Image (cartoon, rainbow, N blue to C red; front, top):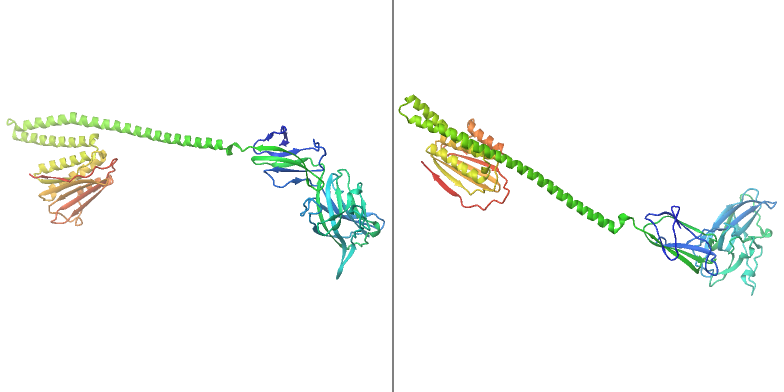
Length: 539
């Protein structure tokens, strides 16, 4: 056995293990055997790969040979057969005949035609070829065919078919005794020509005698019909080839058969194993799946680690920024705020000193007021910068505080409705600053322009939406009646800068309502609302 030209070591009773995807597999075997009588023919089969037995391709034939008047052959037409006929069942009694019809044209110079039934194909041809009901005729236009040759068998009682003769026919070849007359069929006996070739170095044939050779003319159209059965192989069948083999377990079987193609009982075999390629093996896919799982888990952990690393970096930056904001707030409060407070106190004492002229005391009074205003502005700046105030609760407290201070200074009544605001909802410094400035502007407009007696401020946070309403009972105005002031435009711009909205509703004589809203995402679930608390402030 060879694979791709390389020999495979074989040991009796063992398996031949090949590599995956073998190509050009060749089995070589000889006729040497340890049985008493060597088989005439051999058949092979690779179980697991093919279902039918593979036999050698020997060849016998029926031949029309054309001769001229001098007795020289000028041409011939051959009708070969090989393998086994469709109705072959291993014996002359049980096998069935197959009808065959062929045509030929008489060549130039031909004057006679002979019919040969012969095993003179490849020298090693072995087997049996049976021809029955042979008829050679010539086609004539507008007339029935003319029979030129039709063998008639003798049926002498008590004479075996093999010893009987066919008038006008003779045996030939270098082993003419292999040309026989046989009876075929079980019920109706049909006598036929047979070539039973069991000699690897010889051949036999039947042919018509010269005396009955039909006369023909060039251009005649001949028709030859017969019934046949056969089982034909060769005696030097030593090699079987397969282009490739798939993965699997196979068994190469070598069986001896007789001249009829029937098993003699002499057989040997060899197990062949072609493994699956490693990428089709179960262990390989287990390794692949495990590798994919490890890779997926590792990638997932790396993504989480990388995301965590970025978040930690962001948190560190935020913490550093908050520390810097806190430092600035402390510096402003402790440094600049303390000095401005001292200025306010000194100017206040000087304003009360009667030894100063009235004009000087008035100037000191202005300095004292400006200092107090500067302290308030510094307080607002410190509150906006301080990161501890970046939450909704501090924002609500601060809005109430600054609105209360403005109303106190103006001797104005104020009313507050504030739903408990969550402290765990973060609000950026920019958002707090814009909201506080917008609320201050709204309260300042009420005090300065509305001619109102009371201002009502409500604050609530629902479904991530912070809503602030400032309402007064003043004279109101027509929003579409004239150009809006800078204060109203500033409020709308500040809310727009942080993604919010500002809606102003007013009618003459019915007061004014300013509704501010901004979306603030909460990182945690907002606590359940508590009943609103109301606080009245009046002069």
